[in-house]
Image 1 (cartoon, rainbow, N blue to C red):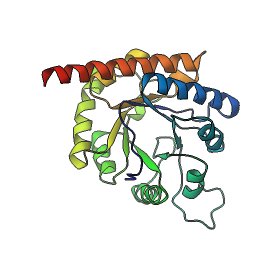
Image 2: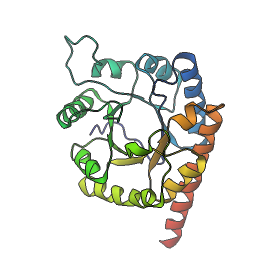
Image 3: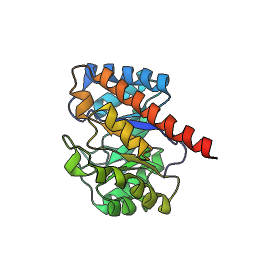
Image 4: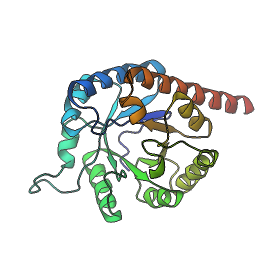
Length: 241
């Protein structure tokens, strides 16, 4: 775990994947930067590699993460994504083991080590509670818990909501400093509100944001809902104490 930089909850990940790039990605990042400042919600933005530098340079509040990187050292490796290059481009972290870019356990282990070495936070995907424990033992900064069945078009059930607190506890039994993001099946601001109220420190969305007619508007609605849910939970806890 890279401890030189930590992300505080509540936080939200916007994943452009390969839907947005260039000017459109930068435009959304600029709006996200302002939304993050206004609502005091940390936003992780994961653009295409070639967009990391212009987005990192143009924004102040975003946590720009690479969508993936490899664990190779400086030297040979045509077509690979070098950790040092990701860092120098301005990224603050890296996303690993997404369902669309799977890694073996040994690859995840080595890539987290390299992220720590160059000064990048690591956010690693896990499909289930059991996977979340396995990932947590590798000491990333963030465990991204999401069921592949919900990615893109899924709708969270009451059982999925109940699993949020369970996965949190499993991860925090390994290391209480690891952040836990619950993604997939997030289609509306109400979805964001509900997962936060169920105990999520963070959430995220791709298609519901980037494929919207007005992506920035949808993003702001989601961030506003996250702020509302987070404040309600923590105001309630403060009253109890």
